[in-house]
Length: 259
Length: 267
Image (cartoon, rainbow over all chains, first blue to last red; front, side):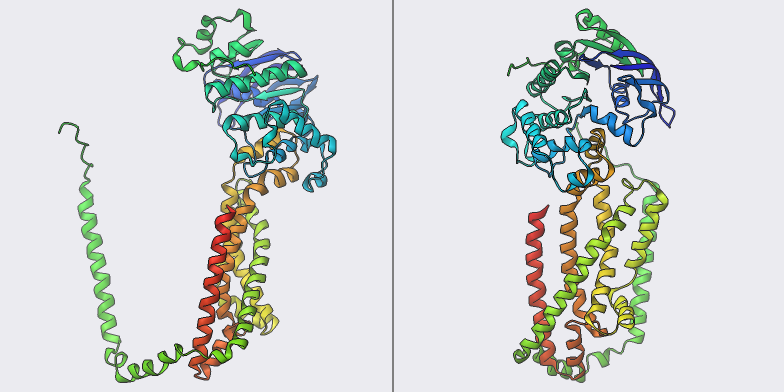
């Protein structure tokens, strides 16, 4: 469970990233955070694995206040909170396998990882996870030979290899075309349901949020302005979150392709 | 023509500025040519004696002493070894200094500057001066040449390496950080794969330069083919100088070609 208690974040230049957030995210939920760019979605998500550090309040992950973590305990936190990025952030010159196995780094001793001495189970797990996102045939390809959607699937395999309890996804489909976006979201959704991994996704496409989320959190100017199950969300809710009427560009379009 | 692009705005000062630049340029040229005219004895340069000297020496260059090929090639190989050992050492020494200089890795302006000062100071010395220093320190042998090349190349490689490091994709580092990897693991998984091909490429390029540089080191006694040049020149043995030059040209060209090929494949 992830719990935000009166959480605020002020950047060194005085900008308020988050303003007094109080929210509970339960285990196994698929939460989509929506809001315009600059609304604080990224800051929200990055607080949970401490890529940014909130300045006030408490943030509990599985009962522990993670704001006090540093060094070893911070790495322990990051082992169980995996992350997916907009630009995939794979090592482009390394093979797909090497990128995926790097999800095990937190579990592997420094020397062993440098010498590439991974256990058979770890290697098998990496391969199984590539199979789950249907990209196992690219095992030995260099990451930069893959298309955007394929790279994002590799990054999903990498995060799965980490065996996380929570997956954070920061605009995972913003650089992809509509069909590929739906494919990636479908995988995330499927993993969330099958493995009971709490998944928190930043999106700014309304239709995608509606299609995949269990729960929607709306943010504007660093504040949570909406929080509720997807069944209660209407177009009007989004207009309130965005503070303006809904436009064409807020929709990703394209139907989900069932795979 | 209604859709003409608007004219570039003209500044009042432009014309005056250009006139000033023109006047200064004319003044500099006049001064240079006038003083050269006053001091250089053109008659001496284009005298019969100069022409005769050229006539005597130049043809000998084109009649290289092939009989000396054995000794010359032996020294040429020594030259290549000096360059190779020197640039290999530099390729390694430059890595830690480059990381010290890279502002995205070491987030401390002072330490970055310390690194840059070290590299700057090293680069200020031409190889031949370094060679003189090391000949004095370790004696007139190829080892002095290796040291001169190693130190001289570190300055340039360190600077180039640090620019490569500053250009890496830090998002990859962030992703690894977010997966719980420690600093050493991030270095080997996130940073090294991004910089290694470029490091190698620059090291090979520097080796190319070092082969040329080490050809002259022998002139101050630091080993390699330069020694032969000095002897041959002192003995007015122009056929041998011609042969040495030929050997240098051939070897340097071959190495340039090979290194160019490898570098294209690397990145």
